[in-house]
Length: 266
DNA sequence: CGGGCACCCTGGTGGC
DNA sequence: TGCCACCAGGGTGCCC
View 1 (tube, chains in turn red, purple, orange):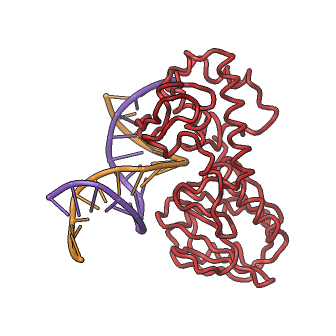
View 2 (tube, rainbow, N blue to C red):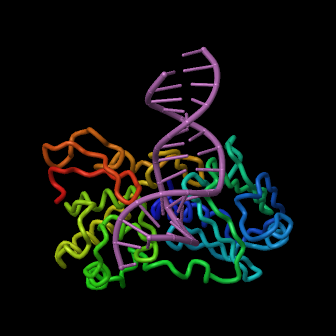
């Protein structure tokens, strides 16, 4: 499931290949993934336009078009954007560029959403980017110290911190040795600073490894990431803790499968 | 504010 | 082997 590192990986790859290329065709197979606009309108907004800029905001891809409008894509849990025809399954729409490249949007579960928007107000509720260096431990502590909710729910709340999903929340909490169920207001400043550092480090490491392919995530070339090989708790139920002699346990926190080590996360 | 839950959706899986 | 109920899961919205 694409989280910040996976979306960042796709962004960096696409950026190299589609900037300033004109869109010459859009073929829609399943318009359900395109929200708030008819298939005909969607085509009209894209054909003849160039993608002048590509950004990532949280788990969103933000394609700025030469018209000034924005193609906004959220991959949901099974969405993929793949360049080139490599026999993809679950294709929902295809964008063709003037140099012959084709960009395939694939999504088996169709939780992803594609929109054309005038501005970013639709994602204006998102919290700060965890990798934004201006974002300080002090601000992070201020955010969490008065909240009673479980720390894992908090760091996955996109309104409070943008881009962290289930995998990296579990991993960062393991690295910071914090029980995912711990009430946020019971975490000291020191621990909070440690947690923010852990979040940043795990996100950066994952970007370096090209993201985690625990489900069926693939990058813009249709290839898997490598980060799943380095995960310490996620999807390792019953396996040995890589830090203590304990065993990784799976519990449910906030209706989400949560992996942690009871031996060393307190 | 916080917790719980339903919904969106479908491939994969576990149980019978 | 075959069928089917059920689950996963990011985001959003609603209710208490």
